[in-house]
Length: 382
Image (cartoon, rainbow, N blue to C red; front, side, top):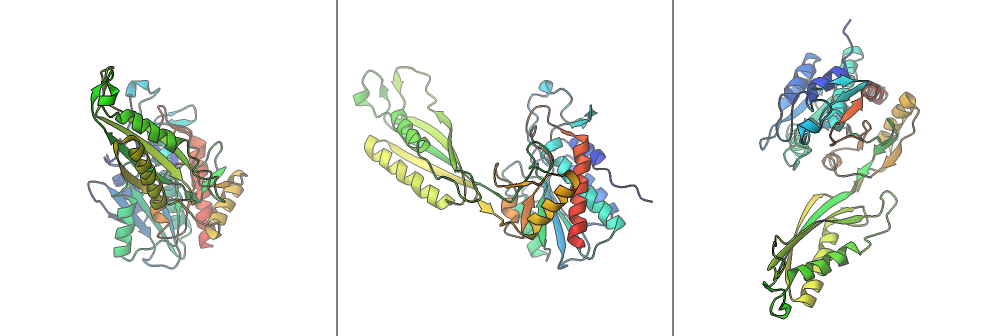
């Protein structure tokens, strides 16, 4: 008899790999070893200094292929002395597993890997199981899941459906799944005026006043009232800076940044046109030159409820008793890449401590998450 794969032990070992983006620190090698021992065919798909792992059990191109996507990279731990336990010790204390990445999302990766390993050992399915695991989700993400999907397309690999193991639950395991995500746009503004003495403002051209006027117009504008699947879009001014230490000098330049999280009432193109129109209006009124540099992390998207979300919901309900809310809240995730490849749903642990000092997750939740993922696999291949 082969012992069931232990997702708690695997999570702890992954946490002990200090894989702060883009460093891998052995996390993908650990997973590759476990998966190959279970009969998965594995390939490293590294790009741009980022490590990625593709793993498949079963035949290539099978018409029924269940995929999992996740990441082993983590954000920095911050001040290590602020942690109750060492951030990369993977210590279990009082029923909790502590460490950077415990919640986001090494536990999710360990749970779906363990579920898949048990499936192919105990009840080999008529189909294939794929795992696409990246080391570049917390960073720029240009060489992570996007690279994996490009490699898959070039090599005839295809997922029929995919579950992304991000920590989607809010208060209890299974209370929320994600069927989409808001778009994210960041706009960097730079205003250029004429420096001068604050006692003689008529001899200067104040870029601060111009940029304050612009920020007030943007922050005071209600973008929309929300749509069927999305809450109202939001705009936040995230920084405002002149770099001016003198109280009696009008500076020559000023900078500000806003971030917009938007639903399907907008696109990055429509928001970009609106921002540039506002810039032009304020520049005309003030005589201050203002430029804007717009960078888009992802467009909003929603995967209409259907077979995959129903399968995920049923598995959660049977294992936990929760009927999950279908949400599009939160930040961006790698689902924004996967949704162009196949239907995708996100589901994982409670994420209350992700990115925090003393990040941790209940040990019992990791075990329960593995059971839910296994039930999804069983139901899909049934």
